[in-house]
Image (cartoon, rainbow, N blue to C red; front, side, top):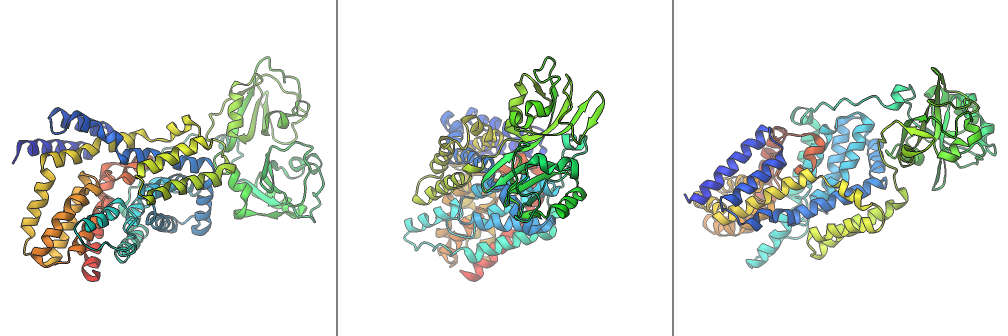
Length: 591
């Protein structure tokens, strides 16, 4: 064996041991291993850093920015609400619904794009249903990878395959030629997730969160909404005349009229038919109000509730500063709602707590006010001369009006990939468009990138170059070809599936396809097998990347899901075996 191949094998073995032990951060291991290749002269210095300018890294960073732009405009929160309406809070049903949706979406767009689009929605679903996100992210990611096998444009290897067939004078596959293989793979995967997910997917304990402001003050009620009909006795009255707080112990948080949402409406705000009202209070008090007012609850179909629950609004503690200009003045006198655009819920002064009508109580230095408002508005109070913000803002205000534009930019950037433009350029164009359209600020774009994942992938890509430079990949492939000559087609297909799977975990799935397809086309002549069938098997098998976070989707979800290498080995091992069995059987029978 050549010394360079031996050195490369030692570096890969050491890297895998460190990956599995999980004692050192994966991104650091990848960088150290990449540097080792350069120091051992297995790759050039420029090749060692080439991964950070690769299509994969640029595409991953760009799609993170695109996904964050979708999140900041509230699209994902609406998507999460839609899924919850359909699937309820049943974990198996949610996993099945999300996985099938992501899988089908991934069949017509890049796998990582589908995963990135649903990542914020998965977080939102976990928050709203109390299902650990670790139970949801991995099956969603696996479904995105499986979806890439449903059409010939679903993944890079299948796109490259048709080019390789044309180069060898063979007829390329049609758009849905792979669907009879890919669709059973997706259905089998979703079925596995639903039936055995609790046993194979990691059961990560959620980090215990500190008590929220709502929990501390005993006001952790769900926001309730209703429509004000023309027949209601409240129609035409002002907020002050309606006396929601005094009569029903309810806090009016916001009013929506068509597309306009007013948070903390003033006491002079007039109630009109067709408006949607949002309240904070107990279920019993809200039901009493509905009975007395004739308003119609909107429940799960509420547009206003989805806006207020999107993460851009919340409760915060504020303290009146010493020497504040509002000392000895009442909330009514200073026009608190109009001045600060936040809704006061509780007033605490001199060990006395008031939750009813405290608007005529003079404020004193050190008084605490619990208020509801947008996080962007509350964040401005951190440096206010009269009020001190004690609560760290938990979210950011959602830019709903930019939602349609953000979706258009996301779709357009994906559409560019079908024109032949490299995915990195197409997605980077979309990311820049998000900033130019003021959907995101430049700082928010930088914040959106998970740099740990970017460094991990950038450090691993040079290993593919090292495999080719040293001749290791060609040695492995040619050894298998010699070994399989004269074997039964099923044995050949199983061996090729295993080889391709192993190579795609070390080098990129596209590189594995480019390397193996020419070899299997030669092998097919010796065993009498259909060369196109073996070529398709290689391209599909290159998507079988579940047992290590080397696939872009797995790398993207590893940190948010809190997964380790062991988690991928356990769940991915089962999925890998199932994948090989199904793809081999269907390709053998159908093609």
